Amino acid sequence: MTYSQYRFKFYFNASHAIYLMGQLGESHPHTWELIIHGAKITDDFAPFNEIEKKIEDFLSQYQDVFINTVQPFTTINPTLENICTHFKTSIQELLYLKGWLLLSIELSETPTRAYVISMHDEAESKKSYYEKAGAETYQDVVDELVFEKLDSLFENREIAAEKDTDGEQK
Image 1 (spheres, rainbow, N blue to C red):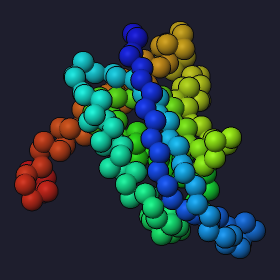
Image 2 (cartoon, rainbow, N blue to C red; image 1 turned 90 degrees about the vertical axis):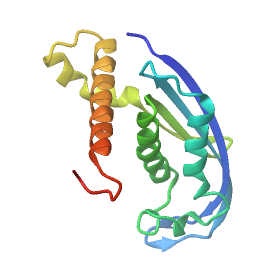
Image 3 (cartoon, one colour; image 1 turned 90 degrees about the horizontal axis):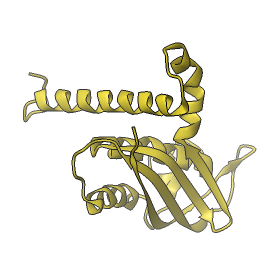
Image 4 (cartoon, rainbow, N blue to C red; image 1 turned 180 degrees about the horizontal axis):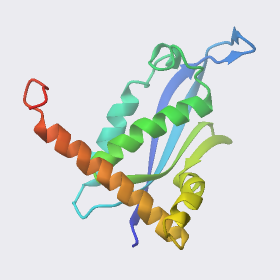
């Protein structure tokens, strides 16, 4: 199975200070660059502007703020790696709800330094599990991951549909 792949790029301005050896360093600003590679995994049509709006809305909580004051970075050291990992989890969910799969996420705090998380790594880490289950190629592994994500997506949609307007389970 092949998937249409797209790249989205976003920018936001924010400052942070990181803990080194138990000491909080000085606050310093960055113009952060976020690059997301995604694949459309359902046949539903999702205009790009919807995807962009969802991600821009998510990033708005970080625009022009001191990241250390935004959850979860009030308790987690806001390093480039930790911020990217948090963004991956949140943006991955936003994309799944629109029928997309996050392939990779790249966060840069300077033009010369970026941290990257790739679905390829997730697939590689699960490859032996899927090979035991009968997957023969890397594409089979990716397909299995997509099917897992789709099952999760549809299960979450069914649960949401069962809730009434008060948010209670029927």
